[in-house]
Image 1 (cartoon, helix red, strand yellow):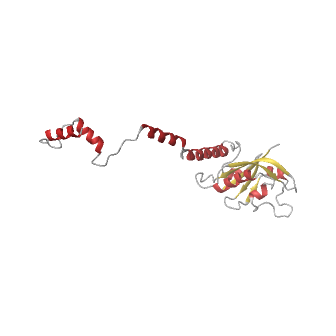
Image 2 (tube, rainbow, N blue to C red):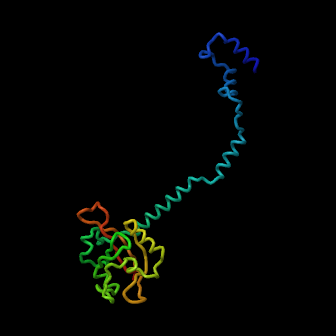
Image 3 (cartoon, helix red, strand yellow):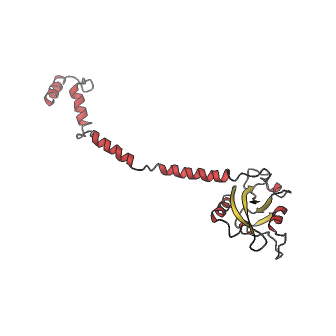
Length: 215
């Protein structure tokens, strides 16, 4: 083959490199030399099959984002599907204090989320009075400490705490405290932001708890 290629090259030496005809020898030379570099033998079929098999056996790192995305979707569904608001739940601070059958507690948007107001239904449900046994009442007390019993599930409480921090809707099935020592009741508690009706696109003005007994 080398002799034939040498003969072919000598026979076409009068042509420039640009117009040199393509022959089997030139194709063979380009395949063998590859841009004047050292010979690069093509991988055998067996080595390629082994490489493909190893790649298939190795766990793909692309599954990690999929798992995290699935977890994010599950968290979103938990918050937005399970925590649907009752039709009478207000969205604005001005309407939150209107007469309602809901047991409502309004608190500040910043830690420790001090209580600013509670509905007559909540007072009746829990046995608290406006002034309380100590005469101090509930105003200014941290909302979660007032509403929840120590018997509540920590994961459910965590969901409510996260909703307060993020100033977004959340809910939890918890044990609610009452004014009577040791007396608690199971309830579905929903927390949602309240905005000012004059600035509906602004930041929340307060946070609202709605307590729904489970009995």
